[in-house]
Structure formats: C-alpha cells, structure tokens
Image (cartoon, rainbow, N blue to C red; front, side):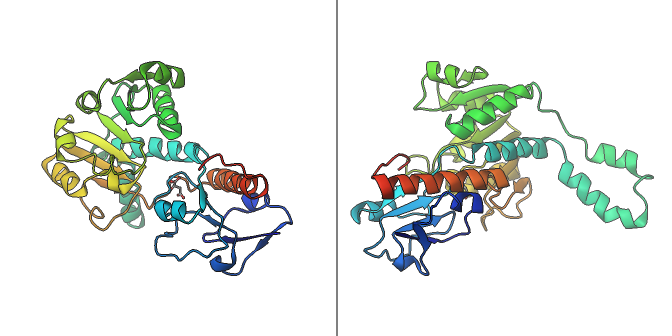
Length: 302
Ligand code: MLT
C-alpha cells in the first residue's frame, strides 16, 4: 500500500494510472509520495515517510532540489509532456504581437453598444493594422522538446528560423529540425532575428540572460517571447528597452508585479501548459514514473 498526496489538483486521467494499491493521504506529512504542479514546496517540512515527489510539468524550480537530495527524496518531472500545449501558446504569442487582435477585440467591446462598429470599420482597419510573420526571422534559444516544436511550427508558417543551444551540435539540431539554421553563437541569433523566443530552464547560468547587453544586441523593434521562466529576463532592462522602442513587444507567460501593465507587454497568467491534453499527459507521466520508482526502484525523469 502506498500513500500519496496531491498538492495541486491533478487530472483524473493521470490519477487513473495509480492502482488500488495507492490511497490518498489526508496530509502531505502522511504521504510516501507527493504529486505537485506549480505549488511552491520551498517552505515545506518533509516527513521521514516521504520517498518521492512527482512534478506534473517540466520546471522543477518550485521544489527544493538540494534538500530533497540531502534527505534522499527522489524528484521526477515530465519533460515533453506539455510541450505541444506550450508550443501552441507561443505561436499564439507570435500572432498576438504581430496583429493587434487584443486592440481590435477591446475596440469592438467598447463600441458594440453604441452601434458604431459598421460605421467606423474603416478606421478600425487602419488603427489595428499589423504585420505578417511569414518571411520574418525567429530565433529560438534552447532546442529541447518545446524549442524544437516551436521551431518546426514557425517554419511551417513560413518563418525563417534560427536556433541556438549550447548543448546541441549543428548535426543534432539538423536531425531535430530540418527547419533550423543553427546560430553559432547566441549573439548571432540576437543580431539576426525579428522575434526571439526563450526555451531554457531556470538555472544559475541562465538567470537574467536577457539583460541590457543582450537586448542592446537585438534589432530595434524586436519582439521577445518568454514562456520558460520569469527569472530568465532582467525585467528592469526589459522595461527600459520597451520604453526606448528597442523592444516592440515583450510577450510573457509570467505576470510579475514589475512587468504587469507596462506598455508594450502582452502578459499571460502562466497558461502555457493549461490545456486538457497537456494536463492529462503530465499527470499520466508523473503517476507512471512514481509507480515505476515506488514499485520497481526505477528512476527515469529525475
Ligand atoms: C512547466 O514547467 O512545465 C509548467 O510550469 C507547467 C505548469 O503550468 O504547471
């Protein structure tokens, strides 16, 4: 018999992976295993019973990894399980930054009661005109599961895609995606691209990587997209770049107090993986990995 506790609601499809040998523990302190999505576990005390934590998602920055290692608690994540959901929102982000869909929708809502929409339609067409992404250069930093899906989808929409990942060789990038021009340095990607999207984990080495030097190397009027983690971008530097026009739009899936409301930002409340399919895939993978460890001692995505 194994006792588990869910710190966040986990999809039923995932929970169905757990057999009758698994019973819900009333409290985390009584559990052999914890399933978690985004809840922060940094302040949590771990009981002696706890053997494993399964994160239904890719990023593990909500889990105190060092403490888990010291206390012999194995941590799993679900790499790739929500990659398609995130990819689709990144493509939506590219389009939101290029076509003034939000401005247009707001305008309709503000004017529909006055019945002026048909009369002013020509004005709206001018006011909310945008640009197309076909033929524009997109830089993808980080060629993991999400980066490669984004690169391929953008290439299918006619974008000219540049990829950079210090851990992926030109040959492997070519195998992963035939659509990517492999940038030799990240600076080359900064200098070449009209849109730049970041898909790297939050590590000491990547924190603040989009700083004023990086922003200064980019083309004037660049669009930067961040669906990875807020800490990758120096938000004060980003605000300066938005104010000066160096960056046209910053599309971010992280509504931090610093960035919220700044002109030129398009802020989404961390919805990248919030699709029924991604939630099911993550929960299924998390539950399977957990079982594989608790029942067979096998460790895969840790
Ligand atoms: C992830 O790291 O995969 C995302 O944060 C997933 C989520 O929204 O839980």
